Length: 397
Image 1 (cartoon, one colour):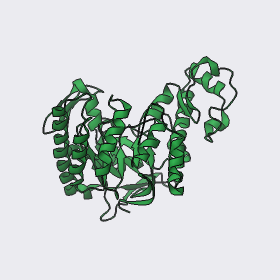
Image 2 (cartoon, one colour):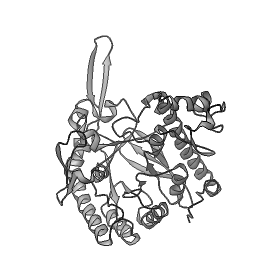
Image 3 (cartoon, helix red, strand yellow):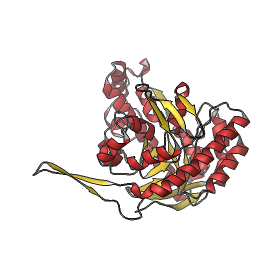
Image 4 (tube, one colour):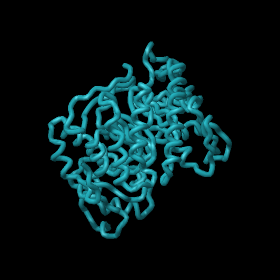
C-alpha cells in the first residue's frame, strides 16, 4: 500500500488515527524509538517487536557516513539490512549537521561539513539528502531543513525559516522527479542451496511519503508563517522541528501551539525530538500525532528510569537491598523478572546487561504510555487521563 492517514477518533485536540505505509500500519499517537545507526542501542529487533514497536527512526547522516547509502541499498534497503519488516522514518540529517557546529558551513546550496568519524569533507544539499533517503528506502522521509539555533535573533530566525522553505521546494522537486527509484527488496536464504536470492517487491505507484518541516525559531509569528507556507507545498505530512534545542520547556509548548492550528487536520503532525513521558502526553493534547526522542534510551544508559511513580535513578544506594520490581504497575519483561536490587547491582558493576534491561524498560514505559493515551482518546476519556499526568512546572491549555 502507499501512504495514507486516517483519523479514528478525536477528544479535544487529541487525535487517534492510523498511518498506512508500504511496510505496515502505524497506530497514532505514536512514539518512535530512535535507531540512529540502524539499531536501538542494546535492543535486538525481536525484542522491539515484543514491545509492540510499530515504527522506528533512522538517521540519514549517520547511515550515509557508515556503512554508506549504496551499501545499504545493495543489501536490500534499510529494512532488510537491519532485519526489520515494519515501517521506518528517516530524518534527513539536518539536525545532525546543525549539531556539528564548528565542522559545518551553511550556504544557499546546502551544508558543507566534516565527518565526526574521520574528518573527511562532505556536502548535503536538499537534492543529495533526498537522494540518500530514497536510496535507504524508509517509508517516511524528511525534507532537508536548517535547524535554527537557540537563542537566535528575529532576523536570524526568519533567514533560517526562509532557507528551510526554499530547501523544501528543492527537496519536493527532486523527490517528485526521482520517487519511483525507491526499491524495497525481499531477501530470502534458501537453506537447501545456501544461496541468497533478492527480488524487488515494489509495485507501481508505491512510493515513500515526504514530510515538510516547520521552523521559525522561538517566535510564534514565524512559526505560524512557516506552517502556513509549508502547507502550501502539498505533502502527505508535516513536522515541527527546531525544538528541544535548549529553550525552556514552556516555550516549546508555546511554539507547538503557534504552529499546530495551521497544519491540516487530515494529515499527520510530527513533533521532532521530544520529550519526557509526561510531556509527550501533553503534546498529544495539543494535536501532535508522532514523536521521537533519544531520552528513553540515553537516560537508560545513565541509570535513569521512568516509572508510574516518577523517575528513578537506579544507581543510588537506596536500592541496594530493594527486592521489589522496578515498577509494580509495569508488565514489561524487566519488571516481571528482576528486582531493583539486581538492576542496581548490574549498573554499579558496569555490566552491559544493565544498559540493555534499563533500555527495554524505558521503551516499554513510553510505548505503554502511548497505548493508554490512544485508548483514552478512543473512549473519550482523554481529559481525565491528562489530568493525572500534568507536569507541575507547566500550565498547558
